[in-house]
Amino acid sequence: MQMKRCGVLGWDGYSGTGPRRMTDGTMFRLHAEVNGGRAVYASGSNRFPRHYHDFRDWILRRLDGDGSF
Image (cartoon, rainbow, N blue to C red):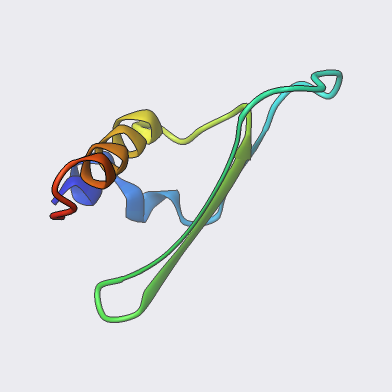
């Protein structure tokens, strides 16, 4: 459900890169297989798809909590 709210399926093919001269920051890479094998690939360096932080925080809460998705 959270994947739908955050629009994760729409992230497929996202590749965000930050400013060239930036030498430190945050990177992410997502590879998810959903809906019977549909693959979503997204990555970024100091740039993130819309609602990325909401989705990341939801994942972290699941990992820190009871583990239920």
